[in-house]
Image (cartoon, rainbow, N blue to C red; front, top):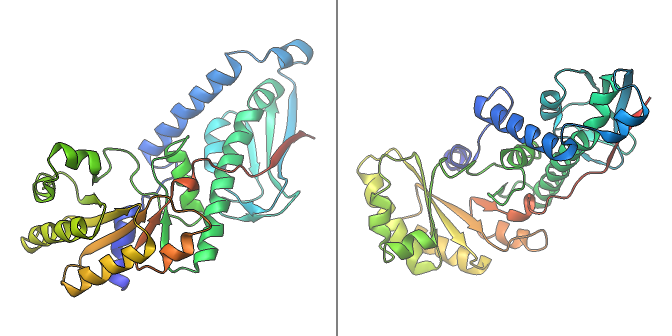
Length: 303
């Protein structure tokens, strides 16, 4: 069981932080886009009524309880200002609790107010929702994000802070053979899997019923027997929990379960997640973790 859990993390968990060049570059590019879209290189109100060079200090405070996420990203956005963090990413925060202080030129601080709050509120909301699902599941199974995100890797980082897994970061981060791929190959599952050899360590295939699952598992086992170093998984997409349980039982009975991870996905939400947690899947992926992402209420006030 511990070995299987280790493989689950290896397959679906990516460590994201600003020390990672790809992640840092992604966040910086996103911040640039958000800044250009919001200010169009000018804050008309601030520039009209105050001295933009005047030094001020503001506080960011939470207006509801939750899990804090986004401070690393806040640092990238405000690297030319003085920041003081009173909490850290992953901390539980209370209503009216001060999270951070920012000091510097009024023009810079006020022009970034909405972007600062958008980042913190969205990431903290996603982290809070993910944390609530983990508590509901009582560690029975791991939850993971999907690519249904507004802010890409930033949303996945928020899921990670909330105790979830990131899943694939992008199309180049592992192989996931989906229904449309198989249609083009006339549903030749064995051919599809064989074509993935040496292309990625992570290989997953979407299946829609027990017949497809058994066929995929047999093909995977053939590759595994040849000392292939890949990690294999099956996505059971839009399959009811009872049927997933039967598929897993059949895989075990047929000697095909060992070495193949099982992902439950499709139409899973807060109300039915416990049914999927009890069906034996290794991981549950949910688009609703990030799409739409519920924001955690926060405010930014001048001292």
